[in-house]
Every structure is written in structure tokens, then in C-alpha cells.
Image 1 (cartoon, rainbow, N blue to C red):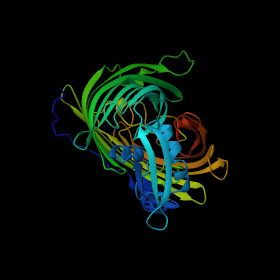
Image 2: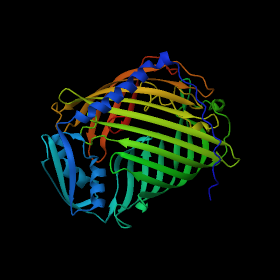
Image 3: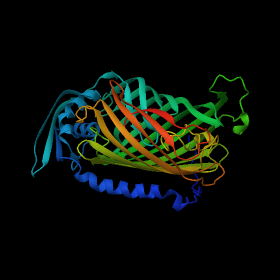
Image 4: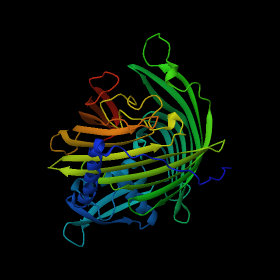
Length: 451
């Protein structure tokens, strides 16, 4: 049984130097403007979705898998590919989709005929989780709708940014009034990257958790999730990632860190109104998450995160994506659970975690702007290759609690559509601030499109 949490945990946060991070606050304003603009971004407006046979469970499944909600502004492509997207999820049998004019000019009603599939499926492909980013399910099994409508049991091997996991997930919708019951068991490893000058080191941190959660869905883009979990971590040896025979400079880490265990309570909220087709042109997304953990000796630590994303259509087929985020971790947070700064997810053009240092960052704020356009074919229809140019900036608090000078990176990238895994993205980032690793540029590779 998890012990009760004493509510005496206090968040201590020093604000960043306002003048040095003004692009971040400007990006925040632009994202809010993007949220207002997105209502009028598409050619059409979705009045409602109707399903046959009529069923609240079937309607919820269709809306969640399409990512379309009444009132959304959409393009004709969203309707043209709706059937294909539903069939690709593997959740439905006998899918038929058609649209009719709505009650006013420019409004459409989407009709979906389908039944919920109750089979066992091999699962692969990519997905996205708030704050953890894009991941790939390399292999897995999914059992759906056997324990009730929209129930889901999944056994997966998942690889994400800086981690890999074996996972067992169970989702039982509306088991406690309007709340979904969530169960999760996970065993895996975190890749903790360390730089000592130009020497690249890596520590594998074995980790695991057993969690129970509740989730509320609004029937629209809002969801709120709460978790209680027992977690553990066991840092392994620090290894050089080159062929040198020189000794590993262990002094960059606090010595031999023993296995630790803790209880953790988490609450998070997500607003997701991104459009699946051409997501780089339409949609707004926001997420908040707070986690408070308690070690066996009664000491507590907290971690807090926020992320905002807005996408705007520019010209015929081009999109502008704006992103800002921030993270904070208390001083008592183990170093391998702290945020990192530099590389994918913060400022491209720098090696992964090369700016925040071996002990991670206490916190950071960052912002990015990315302009994306189809390259093959140029008209944007079923684009196989997208091109992007970007600028990233931010500032972080080091392990000693000091704000560091803002850093900036610019660059360009390609997003290539690949069967089975959706998109592969490659970015060439050029640092415009001192790097500490003497790299004139750095190439990043990741899954998916967008941040």
C-alpha cells in the first residue's frame, strides 16, 4: 500500500532574466494568437459526427481516433482520408464514411458506419505522449473491446527519446462513473547522456513502475489524468561512447548511486485540438503536468512541466508551428530524473544534454518556430517529403540553481514519410551560442512531424 502524502511540499522557483528570454514570451503570445486563428484555419467547419449504429461508445472511439470534434475547422483532405485513417487504427470493421452539407454555409456533417473490432492485433508504429514526445512501438499485442466497449489491453516494447521500455497497459473506460480506470506496469531503461568536454559518456539507468490511474475525458479535446505509482531506478556504470582506452572520468557524477525507490503522485491536463492531416498547418495543443514523489525516508521532491503548441496555415500549403515549454525540478530530485537542456526537445544545434551538464538542469524555458512546406510533391497532396527551417531558443537553471545565459540555434530539416512508421525527421542545427563541445553543427534524427 502506498503511504499517504504529507502536503507540506513547497515549490521554489526563481524567475528567469526577462530581457534575455524575450523571444520565449513573444512566442507564447504568438501561440495564443494561433489558438484564436485556428478556429478559422480550414476550408470547412465540422458541425457534428454521426455514427451508425448509434452508440456513445462508437462515437467516442471515432472522434478520438480521427482527432476531429464538432466546431473544428477542417480541410477537404480531412474528409477524404477519414475512412483510411479509421481503418488504419485497427479499431473498426466495415468502415464507410461520407459527408453531407450542414445546417449553414460551409458546415459539414460527417457520417460514419462501422462496428467496433473485438480482436487481437499485432501493434507497431509511432505515437506521441505529452512531454515525452514521439515514440515507436517496435512490437506488441493489443486486445480491444473484450472487457467492454473501448477497453484496451496492450503488451509493448517501446522505444522513445532517451528511453526504452517493456510495458503492460490496461484501459477500462467509465469504470468509476465517468472516469476511465488505468493500470500500467513498466520495466525499462533511461539513457543518461554526459559530456566531459568533447568526450561522450552514457549511463544506463534501469527503471520500473507499477501505476494505477483515473482519466476524465470531456467528450472534446480536454482530458485530465491522475496517477499513483511505485517506482524504482538503478543507475549502472558510466561508459565511454568512443573507442578510446582512457579511463572514464567518474568525477562528473556524484559517485556510485545506489538503487532507489519512491512513491509518486501525478496529475496532468491535456488540450489537444490538432488535426491529423497536415498537422503542421492546423491545431493547438497544451499540456500541464505536476509530479510529487516521496522517498522511503520521507523526503519529497517535485517536478512540474508545461507545453504549448500552435500551428498556423501560411499560403497555400505551408505551415508555421510555434512551441514554448518549461520544466522545473526541486533540488532533491535525483539527477537522472531532472530536465536536460540542449538537443532535441529544447534547442537544436547542440548535442543531446550537452548544455545542462552531467547533473541535469533544475529547470528551463524554451521556444521554437518552424516553417514547414511540401517538397515532393510541391502541391502538398500526399506529400512524401516535407522541408522545414527553424529557430530555437531558451535559457536554463543549472544544477546549482543559477540561470545561464540564453542560447539560440537555427537550421533546416527534412520530414520523410515512411511506410509503417509514418515520418522520419532529420534536422541540421547550427548553434549561435557557445556549445562547450566545439561542434559547428549537429544532426538530429527523430520520429514524427512537429515538436
